[in-house]
Image (cartoon, rainbow over all chains, first blue to last red; front, top):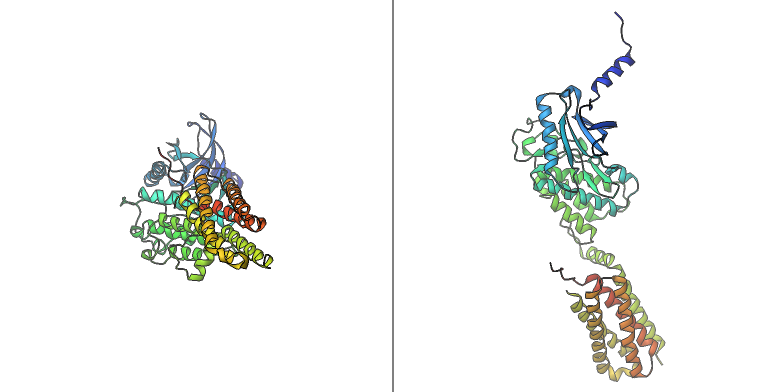
Length: 305
Length: 115
């Protein structure tokens, strides 16, 4: 008997695991990334002549439960029609039984890459707020993401913000979601209750915690972060969910107030801070009034007999 | 506050304040009452014009320019009546117009568009 070399075995493994799209309208261009449940490919939609991203279930995970989970993921994204959520174009089954779904291919960079390109604090907060709005929309439709992190937020080439990877998302009304005790999410961004595997206890506030952790990531390398911004972060990342913002829209509203130099609900400022914020917000008006007063003082002294 | 109302309120306050500064000029101190009333009326007229202009044209730079022109023109008329102190009256008047022009465009409420 002739033994195959390791290289040949590896080659065969790759060939076998590669999805066979010959019966579909798609041609794979390259692999974009791998997740816990599937692989995402860049593919060409030959009928519409455009690029799409296709997520395919892992070859070794073709179980009924995984197939159902993948279809559910596609259905969850499809029901969330929002400019901040990547639209699903198509769902289907490959000849080997693997489920796939095609979605919009987003050109741009991930939020962590965007932040590393020395984006200003203001720009970061704007993008963060847009992500909060998309998540708030999902919450309003009874869906929680459960794996929010900078790597799952894309900044498109037009500056649009898109929340990706709804693979472990949960429809709040569903009861047969996962077994209690299972830890779902990414360690640095998951809420304490999520880390304890309290699946049944998870609600919108678990996503609020993850958004808070994302905000902390965006503020981490900033030289000058206001107390109000820090307070928003702390409130979103409170250990008990009762102490957090009750929703992503509430968090988004506080970030909007921060951007508009308005008082935020998470921080009670003193009189000096109030005046300082007002002056900073109305800098031009203050300069005009000062210029007027200086001019008046100048004329008073120069016209005296 | 609507843009015309904000223009009137600001014009009146700044006009009155502008008039009160005449107290520091001993030569005209005995006419202070008349100066304050006149200056307030001038401020209100400027405020009305600038406020309604801001309601019609939503542009910060054009609003500021209009404010400066109205403020300077009204101040010029006052200086003409005074027969002197042109620079001392026109420059602050123009700056007050600038402030009202800026404030009405920036802080005045724009009515919602009707369907």
